[in-house]
Amino acid sequence: MGTTTPEARPVSRWWAALAGVVAAGAGLAVAELVAAWVAPGSSPVLAAGGAVVDAVPGWLKDLAVSLFGTADKAVLLATMGVVLAAGAALAGVLEVRRPPWGQVLLGAVGVVAALVATARPGATAAWAVPSVVGVGPGVALLRSLAGRVRRLGAAQERLAAPAGDAADGRRAAAARREADLDRRSFLQLTGLAAAGAFVAVVASRAVGAGARAAQAVRETLRLPSPATPAPAVPAGADFGYPGLADYVTSNDAFYRIDTALRVPVVDPTTWTLRVVGLVDDPFELTWDELLALPLEEHHVTLACVSNEVGGDLVGNALWLGYPVRELLARARPHADADMVLSRSVDGFTAGTPLAVLQEPDRDCLLAVGMNGEPLPVEHGFPARLVVPGLYGYVSATKWVTELKVTRFADDVAYWTPRGWSERGPVKLQSRIDVPRYGDTVTPGDDGTVAVAGVAWAQHTGIGGVEVQVDDGPWEAATLAATVGPDTWRQWRVAWDTGSARAGDHTLRVRATDADGHVQTSEEAPPDPDGATGWHTIQVTVA
Ligand SMILES: Nc1nc2c(c(=O)[nH]1)N[C@H]1C(S)=C(S)[C@@H](COP(=O)(O)O)O[C@H]1N2
Ligand SMILES: [Mo]
Image 1 (cartoon, protein in one colour):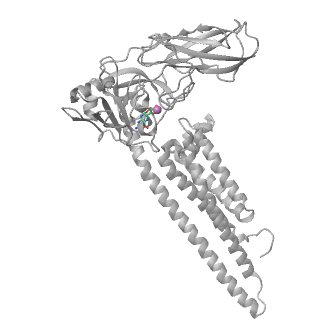
Image 2 (cartoon, rainbow, N blue to C red):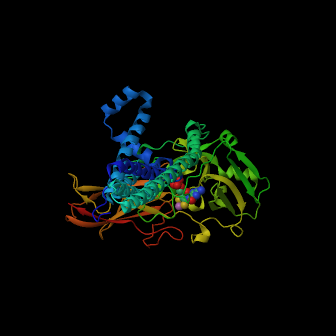
Image 3 (spheres, helix red, strand yellow):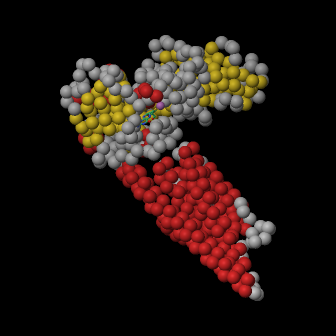
């Protein structure tokens, strides 16, 4: 063997290509398996396919549909498969001839796939995980297979050298044995990788099947109309400014927080809610029984205790459900009970004060609908709790299957031993959405800049919002209309920059609740019971 770059003979070019295809295929199979756990949409194949569909110009899409009809998706996937196989073969040849460029190519494809997946609608950062995890075994396999191909090529070269004397003959026999060994070890590893990839793909189909089934059930589901519809959203509830959070958050834009690595998949036809514990009449409610009850619809703003001042772990939705207070009344709690421990199929629990759930004028719901649809799978399908005025971690159990009436002295909820407060009433907060931190703003013709945001004090309501520029006086904001105290409220101020010199300025916001309490300036981190402080941003006036 020479000291220069090992050159493979043409005969091993096909082996090199095969090495690339097998390595890429195995990596992709691993990625698909991981994707089945992360989220159905995070599959690199589906994400890349979706991106291609979105990027294809209209005329080409029309042409594809007219040529292939409903098979256009299959044609797309097949085309992608061919392109991918060609690229993988190229990576194989590259890796055999110019290591490590094949690995670099495969790695780069993985990185691009990860980026494409995270850019899909509804994607989270986690959608990068399948591609990132798949690249490892793909690259390692490519490296190892290419090494075998290279050795095989070298052995074949020695074989091809003309045999002269007896020593050459022995050398040739040794080279032949070596070539046989190299070939066998290449084929063994290739076979093993292909078998592994096959198992991974079968497993990913099996893992994904449950999620697809639940998704399919959800899609065909028709929820009953509410017996008590929500009051209409008043016309003036949403200023409609670009960049300002919508008064009603769409399901796609709604923040998601839970401990579930994999979204629990619950079949509503087998789902039940058990109401048990310190009650006279424990009972179990089926899905059909729940839907037959008179349902109510309410707008409620949900907030996460982990939300930083100025953060976006808060959203407002229209929830359809049945009052929890009625369920509790039916079970008849004992007088010494003071907590309801709600439990999810995935083991998560929240501890909610029993008295809060029983309040006649607080609309705590066992919710089945969100903004006119069945709950999205990741927001708790088929049923969850929604409690106005309490942070999600002590109230908003998704995929809920049990309400256990108990006592704070006897039971602990999921987050309590992990350092979070046992009780979690939502704290009065306000946020500046427009302009954004660091923006350069240009005053309009009237010399003003629109400053706007949201403020919330669930179940108490917002009474006022004020904005301060630099160390100037607090200026009262105009409040948008609202359906009631359980939702956040938009606010706006026309900041008159006439007196403000062009340059850097600080904007602060503070809210006052409907009871007259002013939001505290004292800064507290989210841990253990919710952040406080005034949202403060820097902007530059051009
Ligand atoms: N099963 C389950 N339910 C859960 C959680 C969870 O981790 N598991 N997290 C809670 C927390 S901390 C919050 S803030 C809300 C968030 O609800 P969302 O994801 O629909 O916005 O769900 C709550 N319900
Ligand atoms: Mo939360």
